[in-house]
Length: 250
Image (cartoon, rainbow, N blue to C red; front, side):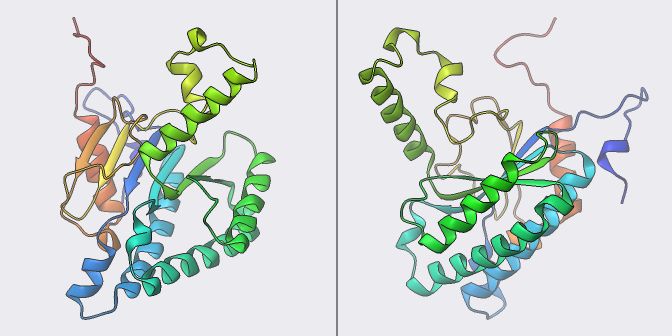
């Protein structure tokens, strides 16, 4: 398969590659049900897809990949399903701690980690510490865990209000750039491309602040079946769009 980084347009110019791609990893349960398997098997397959897609993004030159792994609403699912998801995350984190430096990958978590089991929080903290010591130019994967876009905004507002009460900030100095610094995604660019597999046509409370000018790509492919070729199609669709950011091109 041709490397997206190496592809040229008809004028011989390098194609425009998104710097930051975000993906709603949807369809694991339906993938398993279609095969007569427990939903937990779908999450396991989805975790392997995440590994492959993250590696592919890194290889083609994408700088940031943000994935929606577990929302603030996902606690409503069965104890068995939630436990399976957390177990997969624990295994991934244990492997990540050992491989991040070797593979030149930074790993961050978005979301309210308070309700997460202490063991997982400790592992996430360990990946944060490793990431802090790795060069910023390395590929970065962001995992949204116990994450909701509205919750993220509310947490940011509360922190800004607390800073104002403490005399560290003044309400009148707040602008978009400053507020972005109170969000989980502080310090990284907003996603240029947001992908949702599985045929659903909604954001489901994902990156509500950051998606203001993102391009969206929807596909019926279920997440465990999502592959490099499907990602190439999403990137090609993004590259064909005319991004004006509210203006008019002359």
